[in-house]
Image 1: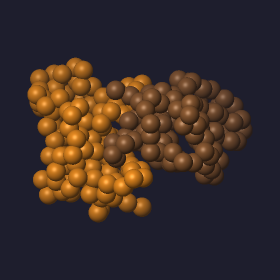
Image 2: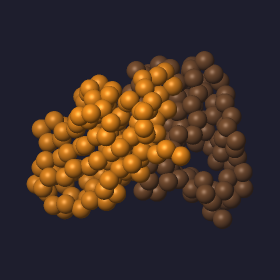
Image 3: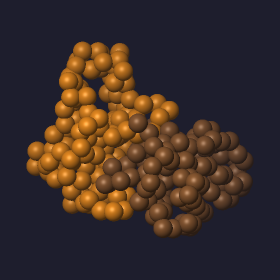
Length: 109
Length: 115
């Protein structure tokens, strides 16, 4: 069963625009992670935010976490064609990660 | 940069045949995971190893799937017999050890097609 649900399922934007995707989850968490998956490839870890953190930055990525609403958002600023990929949130307890269904982002040149 | 290795990258088989996938985690990583990812879905955990021991195989269809990590290093996932519904990407991941952060490092995956 999948814990997280990403929204939207698909997002298409122009290069240079910002992309925002959201994740909602059901049970309490210790941390939440975001991963990227290029077509037909494995997943790459992007960022981890702990339950006691509200916002975290890494390069062009900004992640927020609202534990009261059981939701997180991933913002990619100044998007590039190379950001085209699927993005997954993952929640974990006892080291077992549970992934959502992902948001498929397309950045058009 | 150290990577998780998987082979083969692609496998086409007929239903009722046996298939096997291999994974070599990053050197020194004690925890190894096998995931199945159906097209359009997120990965779902099949089995988790800590060294050579199975930590979690609650989602592994044990009537047809088996996994081993005999020396606590590389691992093999087997399906026998394969069914049409097994068509998916099989991903291997590893982490240094059981930690709170549990960032996982993924291999490129094996794309299985069952005809």
